[in-house]
Image (cartoon, one colour):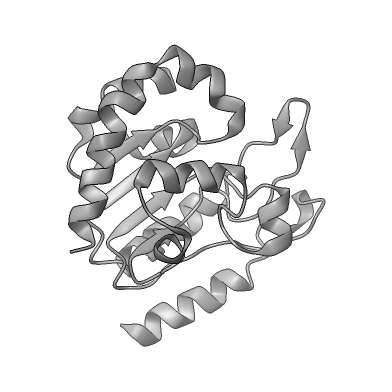
Length: 193
């Protein structure tokens, strides 16, 4: 299995599927290991992450680590935590923030990757793109989906994007940090034992 996994990761690193559409070029940003217990499926790398090649190496990552109750060392340990975005490369800038993740990545790579991650016990679905792709019969909005988090347990836990752009959302939805975050932290703590 290790040989298949290494081969798949090498193929992902060389991926050029979206090259004609990416102004900044292809630089797939994925973190994975067959022993990982937690999987984060987010949107797509931002420019800072594209430049560093390190997932969630930005303010969103700081908040996400706080939500999970773990430090950088644990977060970047691929044997504990895998990170597979909906779009592996930076999609570029749009009118109000980054463009949506490219639609080619998830159908092409996710199933192959998930087959190589047999120990995943929790999948964090960050934002509408991951939630729309993985959750059936979900409510229309991210807020409603996250409010219904208990119905997706124990496999999935939907989260809003941890971007500083969501500070207003967090203020309007105090239940998120009062109820869901302690639950998330307790699961993460349990999975580290």
